[in-house]
Length: 220
Length: 220
DNA sequence: ACCGCGGTCGTGAAATTTTCCCGGCACCGG
DNA sequence: CCGGTGCCGGGAAAATTTCACGACCGCGGT
Image 1 (cartoon, rainbow over the protein chains, first blue to last red):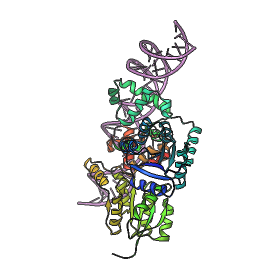
Image 2 (cartoon, rainbow over the protein chains, first blue to last red):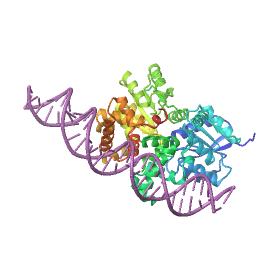
Image 3 (cartoon, protein in one colour):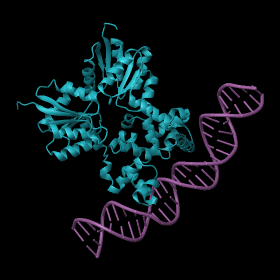
Image 4 (cartoon, helix red, strand yellow):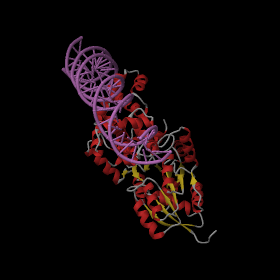
């Protein structure tokens, strides 16, 4: 064990949560919080300045989301260690985060020890996953629910995104320079591939898989 | 001012957030956290035991949600003071919470002082609303977006709920002992009344208005 | 009692959309 | 070159959505 304290940066848009992190982490000797950010771009800036040993990051944040923030941090510093700590008990998010380069995924419902434990794991290079997420992942595998992104071609996925965001078939057709007919065909094909019967199921699936996050709904 | 410390109960399913509350509140003299609960039923039990001056409560919790928890607490003790502190920057939730009897609604993105301030307001009998929610409310009024529940008749609302939850028109028809034709008519009428063109917009509206919460999506 | 009104339920027919099957085109690996 | 796959759209049948209409019921006012 090294003598020097390991440095940590906190990234969460809720001040109260950052306070909570601090209260939990400062009980642990050998850890020191050296920076706090409330969104992705601030996190990037502060990372450059302070170069912490570990970043603890939430996923849902204004501006660029947590996933994108992870990607950018890893792009800048391949060895950056980022532990995701979020309320989303959603396997799809965990998969995305790990793919983006996260060193671990812990949900906020976990007991305080779990966070400390995960921090230690991450610092020593291990990947830490919450038991509840492990379970979710296992379930989704068992259910054979494949990720929409894997199942659909790029074109189909694009149309799906627009269906969820835009309004009518015709608008999508114009935006993509396609015949309305083709969009309708794709719409039908997508539902077929994803195994849903109605548009409402489609939206629900998209939400489960994190294609459409709640946050997206508010903007528009 | 009374000499005795005002007592507070924290209700939030995320341990880290409760830690955060504590760190923020203990800086304030005259406040004392006397109980912590992680869900609605536990909150109810502890309220009976400890009878705090103020309850700080999150909305999204396992089991009975925060809104229902507020209702039950107020039912037991009409004078209970409950301050909602949540991540949901959603006017519809705020309206529901206040109607259920909450003494205030503050979002987690608010600066720490805002929470302390709201706590003081609530303790002195005032109703505290976050500026961002005020703004949301104003916007929704301006947009003339009426609550779906007000706009629809009981029957229509029932069908809407089932559309969002169940699957096909035929299944709803059977469950409600209606002709499939009638359900289709209602479906059409609902979209007309709510001013949406597609089912996808319908789901998004339902999410905005809190008719369908994200949590509902996971269960089923 | 009578009326008007709003909500509910259903029918039928037209308009639109969804679905299904098809062919053409381009690209890629064997 | 050929088979497989993705992409783009046409056409026609099938299903759904929409619209107009009528009937019933409960309710309050006159």
